Length: 357
Image (cartoon, rainbow, N blue to C red; front, side, top):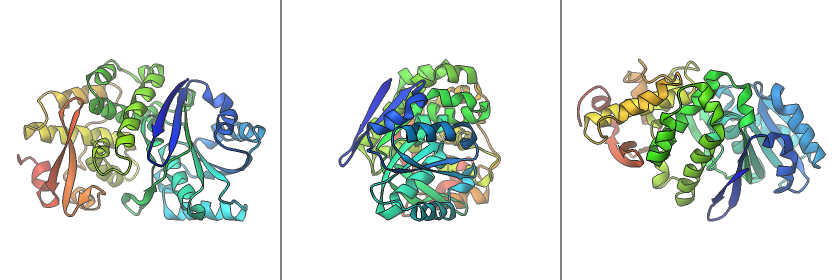
């Protein structure tokens, strides 16, 4: 088992990564929590596969489990769903001494974190990451949020878990598309981390390669993110680097209304912004093609007609990285050397649609 510690000013927790950890979840949770009531939140995709076995293991370890299932998909990241779950906890008599466990991918993790952070002003929280996106990115770092209408992650908080468990066996039941969309975040992290990790993603040529190397990909991705989060928990500085590809990606993900998965949108966002920064001389020539090669090798998209539409620019106005009308965009000065480039919102149409600036 690989353990990545996340040591913050007010909290320390571990990310445990291993194949087969799902067979002893109860024991792992019992190492950090005393017996208590636990809300086990999952979705309609993951629940039929893993809810019963997870509930049995937790019960055997002394926990009283309240299973809660939400509809799969981004639509569940809403105030309405969070409010319903909070009401279920209240009806079941949960107190500040109880806890919430997320069993799922990024949507379930974000939603469960919001619920845990709000219920009685905060109760204990654990993440069991079942998707590649969660196993390499979203389960670590404490960002929790829900969407409001067509604005993504607009309401939330920084709320750190007590433990994160990552088991590559969960990936066996993902479709290739659901697996590969998480790989978009792996390529992003490898480009931010440096030449060694970037060389590893250069050897991935298929979904089967992702599955074979899942533990190493998760370990390297989580280790990089943990270093960034420990240095900048609340995203005032270098944690912004993790947004590489996300400013454009979030906009088209919402405009696609479910036709693009998160990692697919981020893949398009990374390539699009790197093309523009290559044109402007900030990103060295060749990096965009290197990114495209890694993404297309596993079937990820790298372009979209949604880029540059009026609706696209409207979404940029609502982006959380909008600081007083200026966007903090992430560019690659080299592999392993991300930089922040400030662009006024009013200059974005020219920047995106073909003018150097």
